[in-house]
Structure formats: structure tokens, C-alpha cells
Length: 152
Image (cartoon, rainbow, N blue to C red; front, side, top):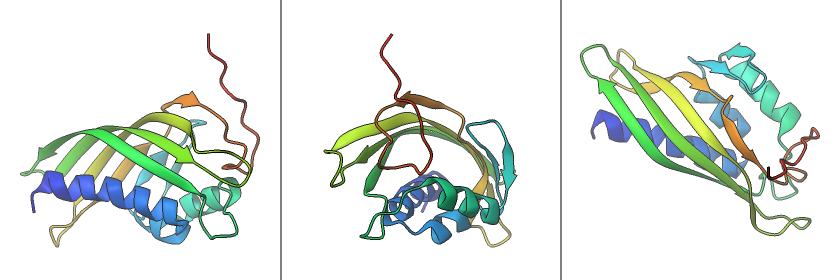
């Protein structure tokens, strides 16, 4: 499997675990990573990410956030010799619950950096969560109030 495929698989694993409501496992993907959050704070490691998600993401009775994270347009650039890579991608989050119909609730971009470990496996080294471009109805997704973005 190529490095680019392994890296995009990490992107898709993130989406799969988040949509399954497995916050512990998705946080584990960031065990060796630095994260820039939407409020421009920087977190390091899986424990702060897990705490953040537990405080912000609503988990429904089915055990999931009732979302589908769709990650598209990955542009992966790999430096095989250095064991590093970057990826820019888009995301769209869809949600349907008993309270809201199926709809996109937000969209934005991820800018990620990856590193290859001593066993040849790729892992997240950095993620920038600050590029939330479009906000819809997050009322049944987040435990904190977020204003709906109005068209200009």
C-alpha cells in the first residue's frame, strides 16, 4: 500500500470512528499530534481531544452523533526520505436525528501533517481544525450553542 493511500485511510478512519461515536478510538488517532482548535488554542495528544469531544459532541441514544463525515479532495504530498507528509482536504458533515431532517450541518477544510514511525506506519502529527467555512444547524450535534451562519 502506498504512503498516500495509508494517509488517506487515516482521514477516512477518523470519519468512520467519529460517526460511530467511538470518541476514545478517534482521539487515539491523535496520540502523537498537535491540534489547532477553532478558537486557535493548541492541544497535544489524545487526552485533551477526548475531553474536548466529550464536552462538545452530543451522543444520541443509539451511541453515535448521528452524523456522516464526508472527506473529499485530499491533496497528499509525501516526502518519503524524511518520513513526513501533508494533506489538505475538505469535509462536509451530514446529520439526521429525530429532531432534524437529513441535512449538511457544517463544512470546512482540514490541513494535516503526518509522520511515519519506526515501524513504517503513518500517524497524525498535526491537524488544523480552525478552518470551519460553513455552519448550518448544529443544534442536535453540539452540546454548546453555535449561531447559524446567515447568507450574506
